[in-house]
Amino acid sequence: MKQSVYLDHAATTPLVAEAMAVLTEELSRSGNPSSLHGSGRRARRVVEDAREALAAAAGAHPSEVIFTSGGTEADNLALKGLYWARRAADPRRNKILVPAIEHHAVADTVEWLAAHEGAELVDIPVDADGVVSLDALRTELEADAALEQPRIALVTVMWANNEVGTVEPIADVVEMAHGCSVPVHSDAVQAFGSIPVSFAASGLDSMAISGHKIGGPVGVGALLLGRSVAVTPVQHGGGQERDVRSGTLDTASIAAFAAAATAAVDHLPAESARIAALRQRLTEGVAAAVPEARLRGRPDPENDGGRLPGNAHFTFPGCEGDSLLFLLDAAGIETSTGSACTAGVPRPSHVLLAMGLDEDTARGVQRFSLGHSSSEADVDALLAALPEAYTRAKQAGMAGHMSSIRTAGTGR
Ligand SMILES: Cc1ncc(COP(=O)(O)O)c(C=O)c1O
Image (tube, rainbow, N blue to C red; front, side, top):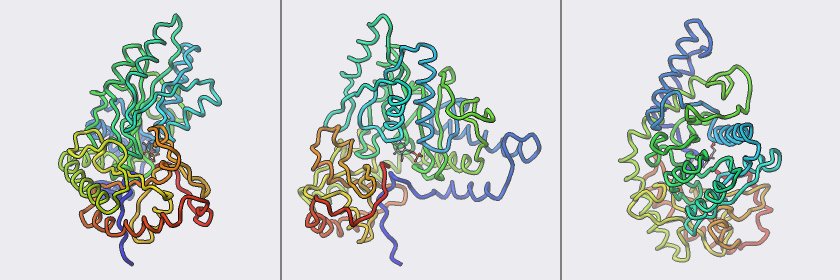
């Protein structure tokens, strides 16, 4: 069977060799890291070595690493945990400042807090490239700080957007919020391993990262949590991970995650330049092959840090993103719309709507994301297949045709 071309590394990226070696080795062993006998102590050593390695890769102290089942759990724990702890200390603090471009792991969590826990969500607008408005953030924070009883519980801003790859000004966000004594969480799931990320240097209170986005296994991630930051646990049990995240630790996945993180950070400068050059080949090629296509997010041709190096995101006028996706898939090219689609009903990307695009434009999206296994041949295969796929997707048009195409994708 012909191998397909994988251009969806932002959804998940293949295991790197370093992680594969550690994972297979550890899977053949046993032992609960909480057990006191020899097997347990051996597993504990593996976990603590991994904690140190992961902390070093993420610019954190080992005691700040809370292992979770992935980015979604880390976001839930941070947002619910911070919110509950802040409200327990002062019940009037129920406002959450959040831009509308967040991944569902954050957006749906804060919406749940609004629906069930009395949270009030305050939207922080973004510009046409998806960059959060620091002016709007400052206005909200300062107005709140001037109140006799301030009401902001927390601010959450993703480090880099999963759809358009825009990198957010996290250091400025933290400086402003801390100036008003408000804690900040960041979803760094897409940023970590792809651009330089240091938890300590960022000053963040909490930060979510995930294994399978960096060449580690699926089902493992971490919340980096400042040592003095109070969070109320979401799940209760054996009291593992500082009593913040109970549950038996998955030694093999944790070790492989740490190996992937170390490899990603070690190779980051060279890989960032290599992948950004491929991305440039891709964006120039798309512009030549389909002149109507528009690159969304910051262009960043010099890879100056404004955009994730592996992200290329376009709108293609006059077609549904999902039609283009399926036609490219039929041609052996695996891509993504990066946006939500439930039960075969394509919806415009909430990220592009927040960036000010109209609904029709926001439906014709396609994200091409590059990673460690990407090559020039992958990019050239896309460029060869794209014009015909786009012509056919346009013929299918925008209306109702999706009912015959089953899809179960969600925001990735
Ligand atoms: C920005 C962002 N946050 C959170 C997640 C969820 O991470 P995980 O798949 O590890 O739960 C993803 C990936 O789907 C993501 O891209």
